[in-house]
Image (cartoon, rainbow, N blue to C red):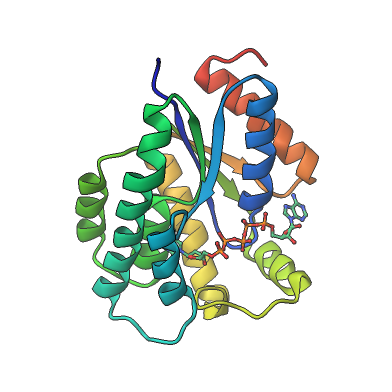
Length: 208
Ligand code: T5A
């Protein structure tokens, strides 16, 4: 049996990652591919316990502690869910992965980027394709406001933070073009889904 393929979606708040992760997983399944959709932080029982610690805002973590909690969650998620799925031949579509730690904690909050790069290396799993959805900060703010739910720890950090996050993802996409595709998240959900499918089929050699 051949190993599954590992795809990630990245981008700022409200860029449409969850919407598009669902669309992409559906389309892969329609193409006859066994696919698992998951997300970070969380994605397994232990990782979900850490997600609550990270997003509740109940504690103001020291930057390195926050980085390590994200990687502890990721190590659990990879070991318990992602690697077993890939080994069983299932494709994995993951909403956020290590790029989010580099961008949110590194670019956004000023944590040590070399330490984040080293922890990324220790995780030992690199996506084959990362779809980076890009929207202006004004779109992020409008989509968060229209949702009307209470902001989590990161959603409450404001426009300057969202700007650093956007720049960070664009920077990563530019520095790793063989892995990353930077796509606009500004069109309708259908238009973005079509752009993603075109990218996935051409980059991974699937029939469109
Ligand atoms: N984080 C995460 C870190 O700081 N470090 C890390 O290492 C990791 C892994 C996770 C938070 O944790 C941070 C980043 C995050 O702040 P979350 O609740 O999982 O928290 O948050 P997000 O991943 O950011 O999820 P969001 O729901 O905020 O954004 P999405 O998934 O990008 O957007 P989506 O699809 O839910 O859409 C948001 C809204 O926009 C609408 C949707 O209907 C929805 O209302 N929408 C569109 N509207 C118009 N046109 C389109 N094309 C649209 N696409 C979606």
